[in-house]
Length: 110
Image (tube, rainbow, N blue to C red; front, side, top):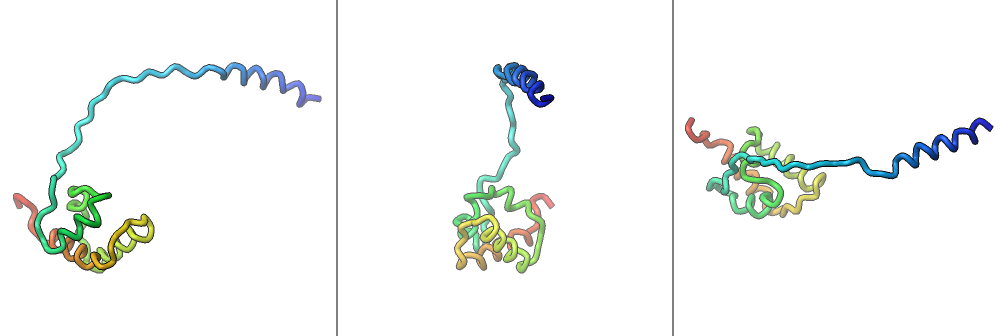
């Protein structure tokens, strides 16, 4: 019997929820950091452009930690299996070569 007594109270609570809360929006601006428009020249650059730039910006690729060629192969494998990246198997060696090459270059201004 006690359960039946709570039904009117629940009905009142639900009836009070029939209006949406007021929301207000205001304009905001956002300045994004500069992103290089192009990847530097190097062996395998075309393979990187064809297979990686659909998901990764040049700055994202160029700011990766320096790792071994074996680790790059592992990273690319993860992109293919876990994230279903459409990377051509034949392009993997060229992508690895490019990333190792770019990471071996001195940083500008250094």
